[in-house]
Length: 174
Image 1: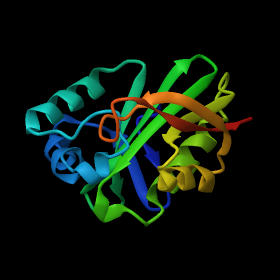
Image 2: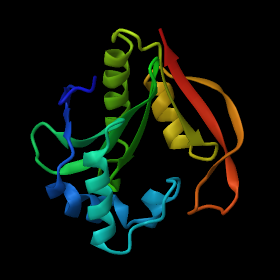
Image 3: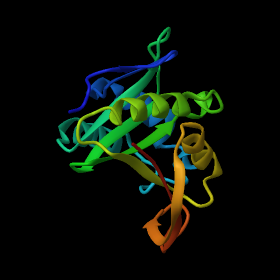
Image 4: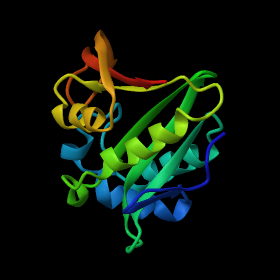
């Protein structure tokens, strides 16, 4: 059910390939500031990123896309689309710091959500963000997602705490 390529006005989402490893490692995977709200720790060695890319490529229940600009081959970040249940999709994203503040993730998320909610059997696309991750909350709101509520003590974010933290749940439905 996953598309091979998504395009937006400025960006292209293409399947992740092993050759993206170095760009991911250098662009964000080893950067503590970027990884702050992620559910894994920054990578200390490129081998960790190689394993992540291999797992992402092999995954059957999810598709991880490289985000690239139309006019430049450099990887800006990644976007993952997953189908945890037949009627709904989830997603995740991370963007290298030089690309922050350009509206790229809102653009990607709007395009993907619009596509998803026109697919037979898909009624909901949703994901969470840490309650302190104001930038991610704003991204989802700009893409038309509504905050459904707060999930208390929901997700461990090891770069912030060893205990589960509260998360906002955002969704778009048809």
